[in-house]
Length: 306
Image (cartoon, rainbow, N blue to C red):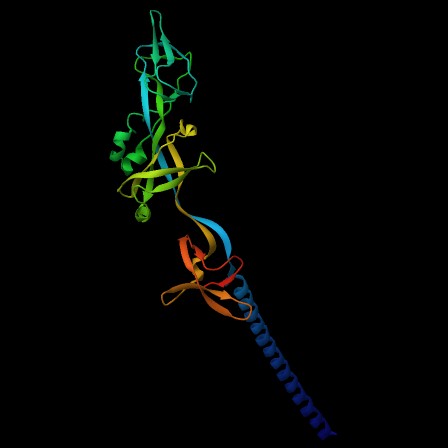
């Protein structure tokens, strides 16, 4: 009986060892299979979501956002005496020469004020009319641009005014200028005489074309002056504006710049075909902020990021 018990104990011990080994192997296989599955899922999702993009037809623009100063041809008329004023023309009205604009009355007499230039009449004078003039444009620099400040002091009918107070101004309704800050890294992208588009933040969605009159080098930023040959009445009361300058627009098939591939002297993209991937030569029309407009393939093509 003792021998039988000893044999049974040995058999049970071996069985336990085999069970422990089997459990360890199963555990190890589970870890390996799980790891391989995770790697497969990561590669599958990465390949199909971040490594392949679909071409599409879009418009991209080469642009900068900056701040600007409006420079107009403005002729200011001042009060010849003190007294109570009466105004006869509407703010923002376009008038010809020789109109009766205002009358200043006091106890003894009255003076009538007329305009001697055609244009838009405004009773909102900010004090920068004599500084920001066409003949002073080339004297602008970064410091003056930043530090110039005006304050509108409007005139209304019935106001009492002192001798020498600005009463009204006539704004040329054809030509005006916009001086903007131009960052150093954009200096080489702009050239005098080039036509560009400008979007004023106050005029949502409306682009106006102007021509670069001059570029004044300075630090930390340069001054670029843009000339417009059509006045915008909505800007009459403004002096400082936020603007978007559009140098060029590109229309066509858009892909990420990271999908472009060079093979010798050829530029192309790697197309993810139904059975294999292949190199397709293309022509780059323009690149802006990580996007490229290309010619050579159509929309809806799957290309692989480089």
